[in-house]
Each structure stands twice: as C-alpha cells, then as structure tokens.
View 1 (cartoon, rainbow, N blue to C red):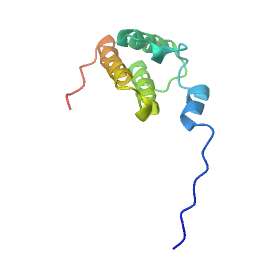
View 2: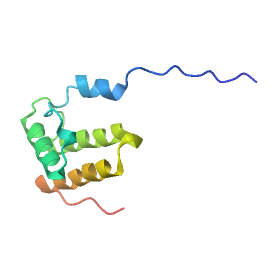
View 3: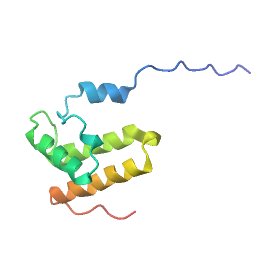
View 4: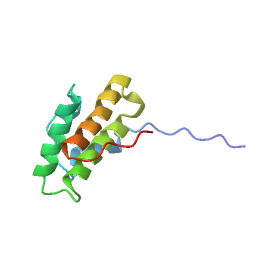
Length: 104
C-alpha cells in the first residue's frame, strides 16, 4: 500500500490574505485586540455604517467580520480572548437593537 505523501507547509494563510485584501470593510487597526467587548462592538458598528463597499446591512457586515476573526483564530485563541470576542457579539446585537442570540 502506498504511503500518503506529506504536505508541504504553506507559508501564508488564506485568512491573512482575506484580511489584508478584502473589499468588505475598512477596520480600525487593532480593533480585535481591544480588551473590552463594547469597544470592539462600537468600532465594528462605526466601520460597518461608514463603509460604502459592504454588500449587506451594517449589522450583518459587522457580525460577519467578528465571526471571521473568531473562526480565524481557531484553536490559537485563548479561552479569555474567545470569551471577550463572544461578548462583543452580544454587545454588537445590543448596539443594533437586535434580540439576544438564543441559548445553546
């Protein structure tokens, strides 16, 4: 039986390229590094509402960018960082007057 070939390690990630070249929204530098969930949510809201290149509503664009950051971090996100980003989702829903997400 032939041995599976080892894959060469990629030097760059597609998600990094998307963040750098995406035409979705212009985000403030370091927005996802903020310590307070409300600061992250406010910055995303401001960016989403100011953007003329987005293809959806400001809420959906902002939530999409936040989810992308969470998914992009994957296993490398600490539990504290993941908690802050998930709290930012709740803060974003509150800022846009959306109902809270259903409990899982």
